Amino acid sequence: MKKQTPREPVKILQTVLRAGMLAALSGVSWQVQAVPVFLGPTAYTSFTDSPFKSGKFDYFHLENFEDGKLNTPGVHASAGAVAPPDRFTDSVDADDGLTDGSGLAGHSWFSQDANRLTFAFDAGVLGRLPTHAGIVWTDVGGVDLGKFGYGSVLFQGYGVSGGLLGSLSVKVGDGVITGETAEDRFFGVIDAGGISRIVIEMANSTDWEVDHLQYGAASSPKPVPEPATLGLLSTGLAGLGWMRKRGQKAT
Image 1 (tube, rainbow, N blue to C red):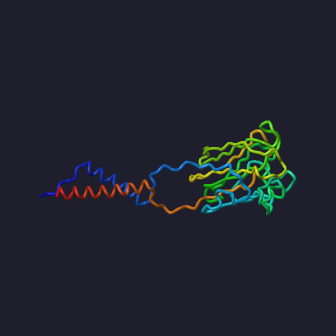
Image 2: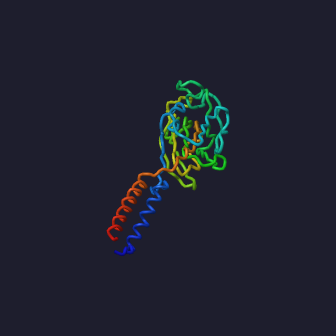
Image 3: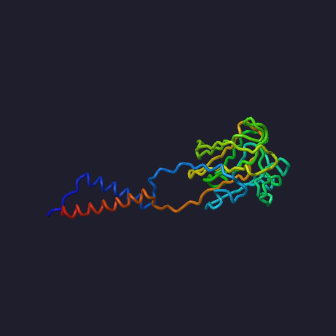
């Protein structure tokens, strides 16, 4: 019997199934990219409290200001300056070598009359923008929320195109400005597309501190088929098997 010419719908199905199989085998994801993840505010006394401590990164930088400078690569601050050890300095607790509830003997980044601090990242220096970025709020002076030593912190992350990824807002402080560390809080953001800058703000205060700026780019994994593409592969194989049986019957 003469072999029949496949009808047009079969050709279309074959094309679609092959495309799905190629996407699956090449590791191309057909899934929508995950949304940004915001972390915190969480208690923080040393880098061991960082949610980034066990990550796998192509690069990672921790700036604790203990050399008196902001000099980790590829980052620029919009305002502020290093605060050296002082009776009002509130560094991350462990930076002086002891976790003893006091940050007086370490260094921090002081707002220096600014109520908004922006830390912008330079992809040209870093190679690519960080996927993880965070900072630790440590202290506030002045009067906010009607009380001395209390305030509201707003933390924001911005993506590769400069658009806002999201934000966190929380009330902080313990009413004391002499280096106590129990109120220190970590704020962070993760976005696979890249983070161009983070912003931390105290709208009603210009006398506050942050510490342990940290940022890194997650290691680039080798492409592997995700669940969605594995499903396409299975469908493609089943579809090709069906078409083979159909062809045998048509012969």
